Image (cartoon, rainbow, N blue to C red):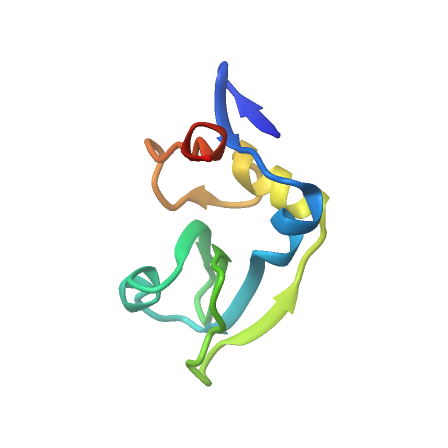
Length: 99
């Protein structure tokens, strides 16, 4: 379970959390299209590259993105606000209630 400011951001077994998150890197681009199919947790840009941590149960089929597996620590840091600007500051996931 990941908590911040007394709110549940994410609650699931560790294996599910790790399996459902990937880091995508590619040429700097608008991520709106990506956001229609995957939940964007964090996004950062440099002059030439965009990096996006997404939560998804489906594969990324856009060949312009390189897909990288990430570990639990990187996922937790992204949800807590480290390593780039949040994709949606008001977004709070409460899977515990949804289940």
